[in-house]
Image (tube, rainbow, N blue to C red; front, side, top):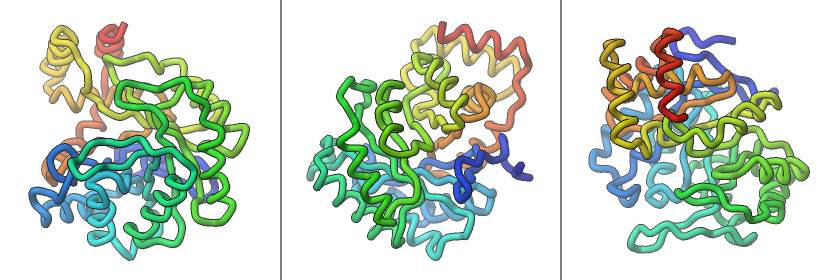
Length: 289
């Protein structure tokens, strides 16, 4: 099935899980450093409602954004939720009183985080829960089985429909798949950071979605200059080119660009639909080589 309005159409990962490939990431709706209330409460609500009006059925969030802020905004703006909307959340981290990110992967904490997401989103069951086990610096090599099994137990209890992973290696994905089905993996990946190339392809072969974050994160000045040169030649913004490249990279890629502005949201959606010619793709591919 193809969306009439959104770049990339949709991706079906299970009988009850079809997501628009152009989604929305709610992290930026919280305050500075993803902590505290939004700068503009009404605009935050308008962004979420506009996302749904544009046809987006994939909203990414986490109860530790704020904390609680983005989930509460999603509930205020969209509850009762449209029948086709799928909210993807994640667990594995908490925030302290100063906004620091605290890894929290003990079984009791994971269970509590799931219940916190249920409460703040105002639902009886969560569509997708990602287990985040790495850090902003990338995946670690720690086993994930015991932690993932906690979520699988909650899935069996009917509190979660589908499970995913965040900031993981292929080996960790394989370990988790021996416990329960993994429908998506959310890692850092973009034109400049291509270490997950093999993982993207492996997951595509399995019908598992790959959800990249930080589409412009970690670029060197030379890489930024190369992207800007391609964007200028195409008459487009660098972010639009970066998003379009991701969408064209593989059919299992789902985009979740974030923003706290309605205007920027519309720009992101339009930019993702940019058709990149073959020579531009080749030039962009070279950025991460």
